[in-house]
Length: 220
Image (cartoon, rainbow, N blue to C red; front, side, top):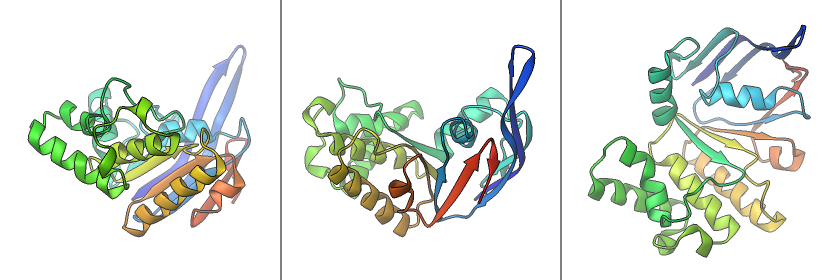
C-alpha cells in the first residue's frame, strides 16, 4: 500500500540546512493500522504532510498504491490527494453553514458526481459512523465527537487507499476520544488502512504498530 525509501526533507534556515526527515524508509500494508509518534521536532508533521501529498520530499521515493508520487506535477498530485487519501484533522475542518450530509458529500461535488448519487453515498457513510439520524444537523448542533464522526465519514467518501488522521482526538474529552478510537478500530477491522499521527502513547496503543520518530529518523 505505502512504500517509502530513503525519504529526506531539508529546509534552509539561515546559513544552515535543517534535516526534518533524514533517510526514512517505511512499509505500510493494506489494512494496517499504524501510529506515528514522536516529540515536537521529530519530523512526524513533515512526514504526515508528505504522506498526505501536501508537500514533496527533497530526496527519496514515496509510492502510494503503486503510484510513485514523489515527482508528480501539482495537478496529478492534487488528484492523488483527493482520491487516494482521506484526511481527519484535530479541528474537524467542517463548513459551519452546511449540514453534516452536505459536509460529507462535499468532496464528491468537486468531482462533479451528480447530486442524488453524492447525497446517497454521503448518507451511507454517515450511517457507517453511526450518525444517520444527524444528517441534517449543522456542525454547531453537534457535539465534538459527532463532528469528528462527520469528518471521518467525509474522509471515507472516496474510498481512499489511506485514512490519515492527525491528532484526531486532540480536541475531545477522554470518554469521547475513546469512542473515536474505537471507531477507527472498527473501520480498520473492515479493511480500511489507518495512519494516525499522535504524540500521545495511549492513543497510539490502539494501533497495531507504532513507528517512533526522533530527529528525522525512524527509531523503531
